[in-house]
Image (cartoon, rainbow, N blue to C red; front, side, top):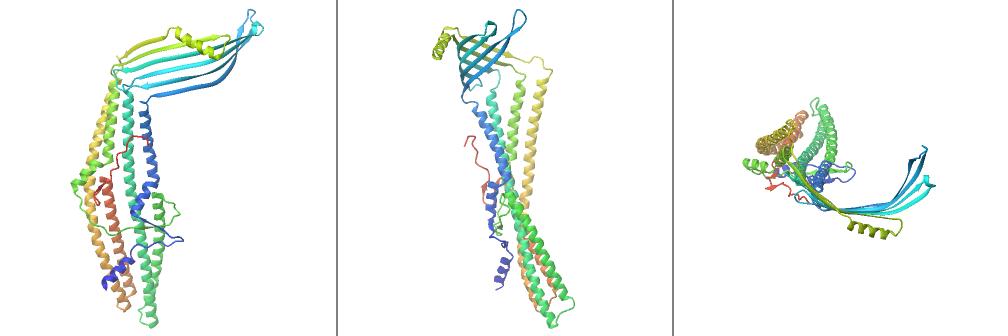
Length: 510
């Protein structure tokens, strides 16, 4: 019988729904995390940032692909006046008009060596007209077609492949952004955990205050009956009235705090502020063992800060190489070969002019050339040398940051593991204390009903019970936050033996 009473009372103190004008949406802890990772403003913002670096990488990578461009300029007409000085010093003006149409076709192939091979062609037709004012406005007309086909080659020598280097930098930047995005996600999970259990605690506290008000009103009713029978010490009725008023104020205050916390929680996870919610949490859990060394190893292997530091080292090593190249030989090999054709006639069709221009291209000697250039800085007053030293110092800083990060992480994990064990023990103690406190308060209620306890003494017992209940929920939340912090700092779930590491994101377009 006592056990059934205890279970009933414990269930009475569990989280109850917050009645509003509409049926609240019940949200579990796992559902809250899922919603936040999909709808949170912070997650969405930094996902866009990650996507931006990904597209930057893909843009850089695309520079190794062949490029084909076609430019077509639609008919364009211009007319200009040209001043001509005559023998008598008076100017006259010739009118020149031009109508053009044509296009360009360019193909560029980037070589794996960092050079490029290009083919280009161009053709345009022009109708040219000149009005000679000094010759009684005689009009001269001419059609001309210009055609060109060219091959070119360009290859840097004595230096690194800058295109590959730029692609590597873009890839490392993308990997850094994915690391940071993962950190953002883990931080969001922890922040949602904190906010979730804060709302849960306030709802729990509000229910305690409601139950406390019910008990104080029942005590007031019993006190009033005793007054009517004349079996009431002086001042008892006043104490009972004051207790009811205080408990009513507590209910109003806790209700306001709960509403504010719910709004903050909905804003965090990305829910509409006008949506009514209730949170559901499982107060029971199985204790688990965390091996200290395993936790440290998982953290050093999984933490995004370490991965980011390693990426920073790679990026800075590239900057060192770039600085050293300022003091090295640079060279370039270039070559070109092109054919040019031009046809000009006073008459004939456009087709005839085009054919004539190609004939001219075939008969005319081609333009061609090859060149080798080499450069070396003979005197720069130590600019290049100091630039190298600067980048090498920054590289040393990146390595120091990595070492310090690893040491800091190890210290964090040691502290967190100890806090998890301490929080679990405190929760077990406070849970037992709550069970005892509930039994004790029921006994006090019966004593009060039998006249063996005053209203003030019962109020003190009620306050003691409330404090024990709050300590219980506080210890539970502290434990949950400690576990969440352990998950965040190790990227590993020791409670369910699973990794939180995201799958490798491929650097490909989706």
